[in-house]
Amino acid sequence: MRQIVMAAAIVAALCGAARAGEAVSASDAALIDKVDARFAEVTTLRAGFEQKIYDAASGQTLASRGALALKKPLRMLWEYKEPEAQTIIADGINIYFHIPAERQVTVQPLINALNSRSPVLFLAGGKRLREIFRITVVPGPNDSKIPQATLLLEPKEKSLTVTRITIRVSTEDYTIISFTLNDWTGNRSEVAFTDMTVNGPIADKAFSFTPPKGTEVIEVPKY
Image (cartoon, rainbow, N blue to C red):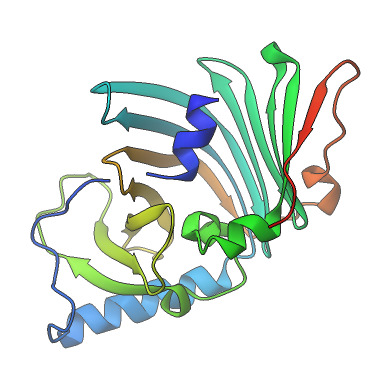
């Protein structure tokens, strides 16, 4: 469950980011406009992902990988394949956390995550980035062969989980290619996408979940 819990709430201080209230240059404003517009255009996404989770308490880093599908609004499927099989499914109503090896699934109403003001569902949300976050451009050299830019997203409403999100976007089409989630306790989760397919057809049934026979179902009440 560590990957699931940590992936849902995560911290790293980013040096060099523009401070709140600082004037935004015309070039930065144009970049933010393009990223926000592209994000709004993305309705579905399929991709592989590689994740690194840094646990501040233990000082350890856990690497994992798998596949992702999402469909706006609020439908997501994260299938962890390594180092162990785990699944997170959001079907628009509930979120399911399934660990096959433990024969257990936790079901939580999606409204709980929304009530906690967690921005962790930002990828599959129905809002534009600007509606949820204050966005600034992080200056610095591009250390990748792919032309990229880095943006810092800070929740406009204080979140109970995530303090800030850093995204990297391709400056060729302004699609998000990786992001880092940061939490109050010093933990950090970095997710990079591979082999992305944007706005391809994905049926709603891809986000349905039926617990396998013999699986213990733990239901978290609505709050």
